[in-house]
Image (cartoon, rainbow, N blue to C red; front, side):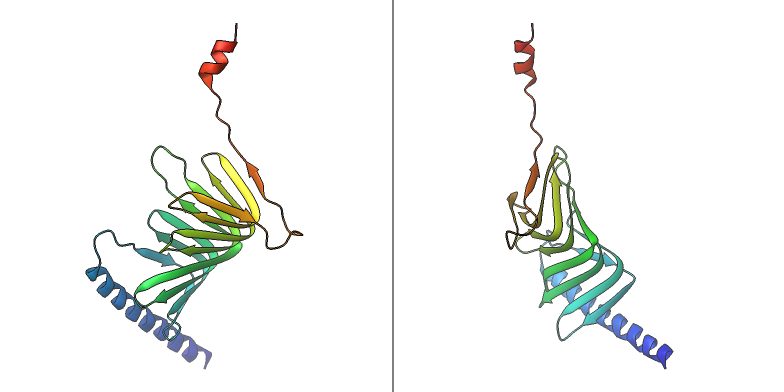
Length: 181
């Protein structure tokens, strides 16, 4: 009985993936060449057609537009043929984004990471930290706009973790050499 349920579950996942990939292929053909592509790997996946969600569990890795999100569980919420929200949970879940060749990569870690592709907003909650260009911020909650580079950090209530920032202050080599004898 269990073997039959697993076989049916496997078939349902396979059918769900085909439906999802078929709609994604149609959407891709109608969008321009700058469209995003999401690739997710995990130990298991469940597609819920009525809720329009796919849940991946176990060693999950998601790739999209030069970004990588890693966690124990990833939930992808869709609306029609668009990805609305990617929620990742882990101990911790991690985020990495390749930046321009002149800048350092952006990395983040938190118990929960929510990525909203339409607004390029990253929400980190639960022991959250974000590092970029040698600077680091940690807090209970961090919201970071990947496009604008705007950061908002805080705590839902005053009794939780305070905001901590560690900033890299560049030295002015011309000023230092002119002051030395």
